[in-house]
Image 1: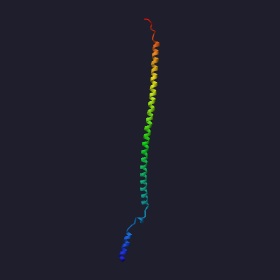
Image 2: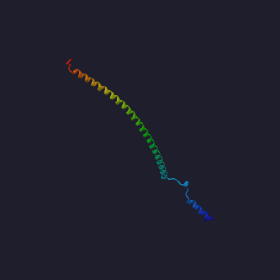
Image 3: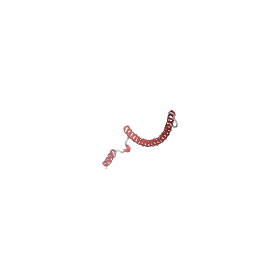
Image 4: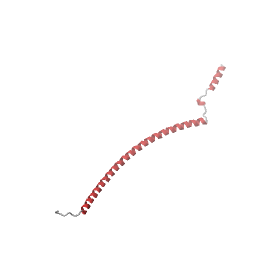
Length: 110
């Protein structure tokens, strides 16, 4: 019975429990590095998603701004067009009046 007890004691000493294991500085640093890497990857993915959302929002805002700017430019172009048309009419009227003033008077009756 003594040999069996010795054998059991030897076998119990050969079995290493994870709970009894002492972590060294390199193992601790490696574990912390792994945790930091996982956290950084998570934060990077979150920042990337936030960037996509912000870019989409900015794109929509720029589209809306461009639409409003286009409306204002159309109105301004219409106003300029009307003013140019009136100016052209005035120029034609002035030119017609100037021609009439320059034409010699035609005798009546002949």
